[in-house]
Length: 165
Image (cartoon, rainbow, N blue to C red):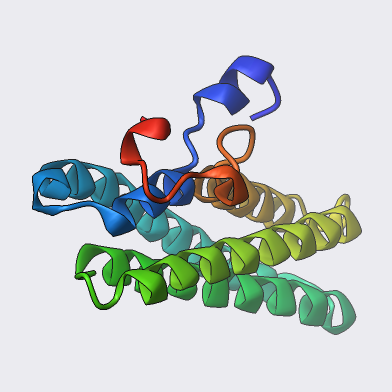
């Protein structure tokens, strides 16, 4: 995810979902086709979390505590993203604001988890290559879920789903 083209190509999955919160029934098909890849990406991140948790067991206790904290942050952020996607998928006229807030909260949690992962990955660099590889994979997939290099959630016009499409 280092080339500019790759970053631009990595669509901001949560940011793309955000404008669908206020979509009408006519947007139901678009909403579904956007939510499916987001759910799929959260499943990829969940698998990465499991792998990272298993391979980190070989680390010394002091480093393992930091890695465990980062993995738990990633898990909490992924759970928040899954809940936000469910809120968007079931949103109606009375729950639009709550769904929008959930998406923003999930994005913030993913940003924080990403920063913690980046810090911990640099701390274990050279200690255990398997753990480093697992954390790098987790970092990459969280960044895809965050939409690094594409639309920023704060700049999305929620009232106009076409603005980001």
